[in-house]
Length: 308
Image (cartoon, rainbow, N blue to C red; front, side, top):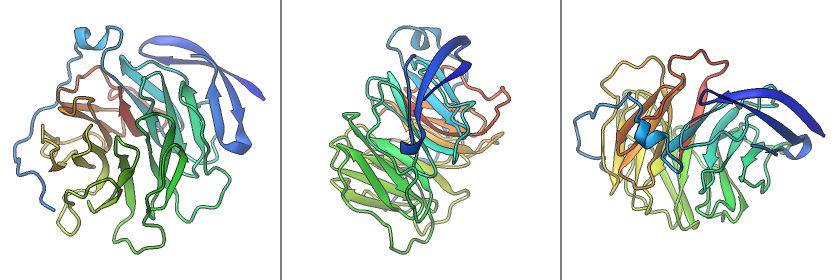
């Protein structure tokens, strides 16, 4: 069935889009359109958009998604559609972009998958029994598959994403809150809210924060582009680095209007961006600030992001 969903906006432009939905399959496609780093300093995030770096074709950009499926795009990231006013069975909890930057997936807590642009639907857990809700997703390097992770560490793979193990059915001190995949497609990491790390396949364990005190819970992670390190981010914007992942700064010493909910690293691996639940953006290293929704009233909170 087809639904004309009216008009939506991104980057100050209004874009008409047409949605074809297959509710039973959880499919929606859019036809148009051990020791942490010893670093103790706190780099200061940039909040002035660079017109040179943000507004040229193929430039760096980022997407982020709200729990109602609203999508906000900045810089070189193009808008390919969003879910409102579609009524969801369960809230959106994460997103991932394709390797071209011309599409993205969103995942709901019931495992429903929603695809836009050149993101391909490979399957979902929508309508199937889950022991615990889905809390995040990661795409494979080829963009021909994706992983979903549940709060109990259960892993669900689709397309060319290979299953290398899970924590489902095993005791966890704290729930899983996010994941990252290796660039080979042969492994992945999961992170719990206490900073515990669980590695599978060819994902190497470089250390974790499990068992160490945290000012605020960990809410997400990102791996560097060659897979020899990873970053963890806490809800206060604190950053913890392992392996060859470099510390470029954090907001751990700053007062935030809203908590950080996710992060993504740049393709070079020389920087990262954090997003807060109000859409506030914090950039470090070579990550470029291209705008935010920090000063805009949102219908629902931001829950995840990806860089392009």
